[in-house]
Amino acid sequence: MAYYPFNGATASFAGTTFNITSFSLEGGDRAEVDVTNSSSASREVIPGFRNPRRVTLGINYNGELATLDTALATCANGALAIEVGSGCAAAAAFFSGNAWVMSYDLSADLDGIVTGSVTFVVDELT
Image (cartoon, rainbow, N blue to C red; front, side, top):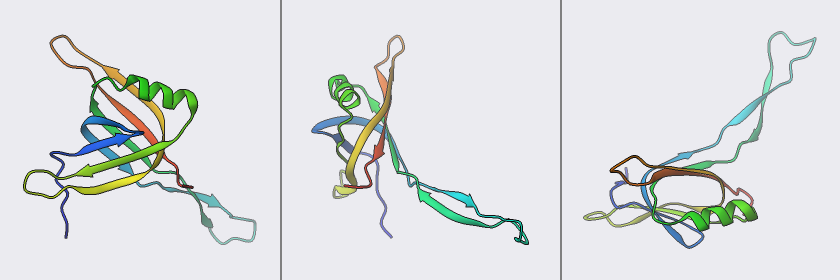
């Protein structure tokens, strides 16, 4: 069984590297399509289409605003990659694929740094 250490993890999108503090990868899900009819003895369902995967990065902001704004404005997808492992563990590709920036938020407190999150939807067709 392989373990993936988070310390030293990096993420990049469209050539911009993010200082990440966390990430999550939603594997997608399927809707249930109700096909129950008057001759059914009980509810009947079949699986619907798979929803796209989502990746959310927690970041320490380091000037990536232009990349995010451009990606949102142009609806252009870009290469998203997450690599994990450092120190004694060899770096390993954890996720790689094309994705669209769907949203981001940034915030800061007094005597703190600007932090935020960026959410991507994976382009399942490329």
